[in-house]
Image (cartoon, rainbow, N blue to C red; front, side, top):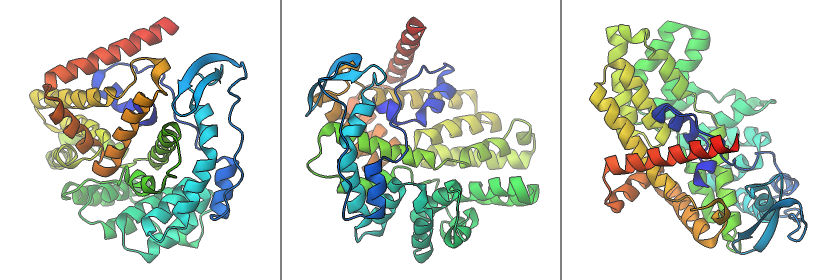
Amino acid sequence: MILAGLIALTAAVVSLTHHSVPHLPQAPPNARPAAVAAASQTPTAPAAAPQAASRDADGGGALVDICGVGRVRLDKDDPSGMEYVSALAQPAEARWIAALQASSDTHARVAGLVLAGPEQAEAMAQLALQNTDPALYDFALGACARTEHAGAACAQISPEGWAELDTDNAVPWLQVARRARLAAGPAREAAAMQRAAGAHRVDDYNFSLLADALPSLPSDMGMAEKYLLAIEAIGFEAARGASQYPEASKYCSREAVNDVRVAEECRTLANLFESHGSTMRDLVEAKAIGGRAGWSQQRVDAAMKYFAALMAEVEQTEPATAEARWSCASLSAANDYLRDLAQRGEINALRERYERSGVSVPELAQQHRDYIEKLMQRASALQ
């Protein structure tokens, strides 16, 4: 269930396990429902709630118990139940976005704008230009890149502007390098990569949207709706892109690291991703770049085992059976984990869980391999 929401980890699992990950239930689509669109236009007057799927209708799907709702027959086209809970959560989602947009806290207002959709990009850009907060600037940069009708404020938002605000963060410099590679040429790309390698932080403010938005979730919501909306917030964060990763991989290609200077920069960058990264994707990038730029095989193997051990901690939050995914116990564990992500960041949250478990890295890594093997067997059986 948690893995379904953390979409970005799919590529990470493939990279470090050398398996093809089978299809997992996906988070609800990012298309804005009518209630949410109305909230973005009139924050204080959310639209009327749409009707959830009928609990009594026989759509040919399975009967499941949804915590706080009761026994529900899902539609056959909604085997995961995500669409049912999404419809159930729409009224609360509208109130959530309205509360965020009406907040006196700038971060909360930006979270409300992000959740309202890409049409709010210009408003986000205006807020970013009025402040010197690099996280706000990052969100505006992502929103402006996705909008089809960028305005005057979006035209002033750029990776270079982010780098000026966040000079000791490798991520904006990697985005500057990407833009230089596409337009300005290798010399400017190399200069930006040098700045990235010389940084002491690597932070794309992942999960900051979740951290800013969670406190405003309506208190009368059920656990299923809270889980669904938190997963949606993570989906919006994932949709911002992550152009720093392909840029780092292209610059640190197998051919490029034959240059001693480039190899040294790439090793430094790999060390930074490993030691200061906040997401599992950062660990994947560290292993990939470091393996090409001179890390020993022993160090690469250790990085793979550590990643697998942390993944095993994610998998501990998965329900024992598909039928239990919406149980109160499963949702309580999932929501606790999501709060940990918001408060501590992905790697820190998982590291704390690993340290509390008392289980060794090799044992956890084996648990992860067993988990992936079961997924593969399940996928084969369905074919």
